[in-house]
Amino acid sequence: MFEQSENIEWIAPYEGFAYREQTIVVESSEQKRALEVCGIDPSIFGDVVDPSFFIGLAIHAGVESGITAEGNVNMVQSLVQHAPMRLDEEIRVTGNVTTVEEVPRGQAVTSEVWFTGPDGETAITAKRTSLRPDPAKIGARGAGAKPAPVVEDVAVLTKLSDVAMTPARVTGYRSDGNAIHYDMKAANAGGFRAPIIGGGMGVHYLAAAIWQKHAPTALDLDIYFRRPVFWDDELAVMVDDRSGAWTAICLAKEGKVATEARINHFA
Image (cartoon, rainbow, N blue to C red; front, side):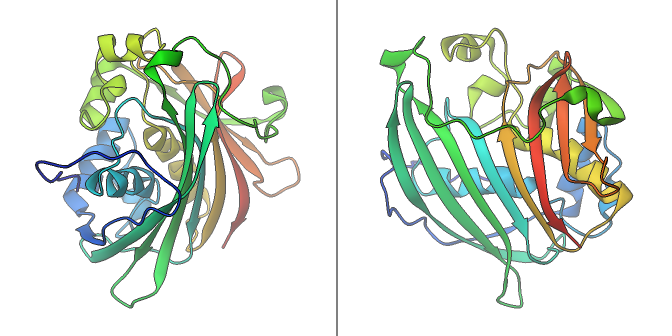
């Protein structure tokens, strides 16, 4: 699923840069492997691709087009499933860089990637803003405007499950493309005490909880990566269901939100 071309010529992202069109396949064997490493039952998704994978696949589309992921940190992710994508089917990938903003810690880069199925219709739209750190600005604070919190008080949420991160789990999930997810020196150089999980890995736990309860065919999430999740963190999956419907879901650690998602819609 993440076969990288050799001899990629890296470029600095710029507004309007168009990704090279690609064709990929999410193999059922790879989804099974990755979810089992996370401790998630793959049967929850049946023959449908867990949409969390499209976070990493969108990043990989940029990598294949010459934008390195090394050292980059996810901040905000919009993930819209217009229709389910099936495992083992060809998927066409297109995308571009929409904005590049200078921020105190480097650059905030926003991109949008579209995944199209065999019927020619866009099934997944993945829009992402990530921090591209400037090595000369390590220690600086600030990465642009901070969106308002989705979950203001973890204590009012309902806990669905506990999740224990381990170095073996994090490195076993996916250990290429960005060394801050598996190498202590790289993580420390990026300002982290230890390797951190990739954003998509954390979202698997949120998606699994949604699918286990609702199994939607369409889904619209705004995802915010508030705090890093380290490879040895203890987490809880929690949902805001106070209105009788699921309006938000998050990964919490030590009573604070690490990754949270506003559930705009599912059906």
